[in-house]
Image 1 (tube, rainbow, N blue to C red):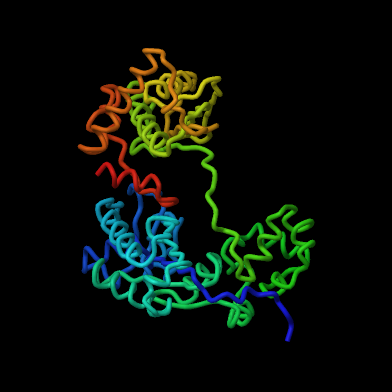
Image 2 (tube, one colour):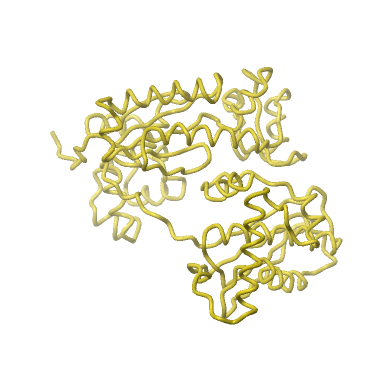
Length: 419
């Protein structure tokens, strides 16, 4: 038998994925929606996109990213709802609470997906297998989050195989992938079925004679490193496919930002500035929550007629306070072509560095600014987000809807902290 150099370790990683989480949360709350094709969007408009779809909708070809008009053409009875953060807050908190009962080493990949590392957790497992624990977690989700909520559980020796296992038999599956069955699994799937290999990487692999997962596994390490990926990532893929851990790391934070699609396009300067100011204060909150400071600011807009505008600037000194961010962002915003009607707008901060707020100099005005920022953050932490805010953002607070973050959970954790 061919030696594929697979990791022989007993699986200690579990990946949990709530099935069609946001659509399922709505169906859980509204039993009349169960069994019906439906989806969720951030804001309903004629050409808004589906950001989550029920399994009934997916069966009809209505998937994430499909526009509302396309979905209605596929299914005239398709139901689309706006996001309801309160439901997803309950879902996220409940899932996290359940996961924490089984391991202290948890990483939430998104608000509906998480990883449990059971290395060193043998005492807490009390002699049970990960499969037993997985079935117990599934039952607890059913009992504690609602009888319509289901999860997929994947178990593997590394994060990659655990995630692949979690997607093997959707919905409501529980599978293990390890050195005993991963070869048969690779023989049963296509190249683009591999997590992380989308169309572009698939084309790159095929250009070098790699058409199947098995050919990917058998590829020479030097071919992957020097010719296919042209970096150390080629070796990472070689190890990842074999069940060795290469994804247990913290990524560097590159930027923090916020964007917003206007409910009605406008070129009213006062109205737009208030909404942008609200976005700026949201970004400032995110910046301080991550305990970093920024040196760069970028402001951008998209126009209703097509095209857009952006401007950015790097500064010598770092900043973190809302007032400083707004001063820099508003100057950039004033440079836009003001006769153009804005459809979307956003702001992001970049060139981030660890915060030096604990090492402030003795300058009195700097200390006062820091004390004021801390006091406002503490009040908002205790009484809820935007209890205190700049008067200029009043219009923005009434118009900019809080959207649900569908990537990492750090910002969502912040929203819960300030709820």
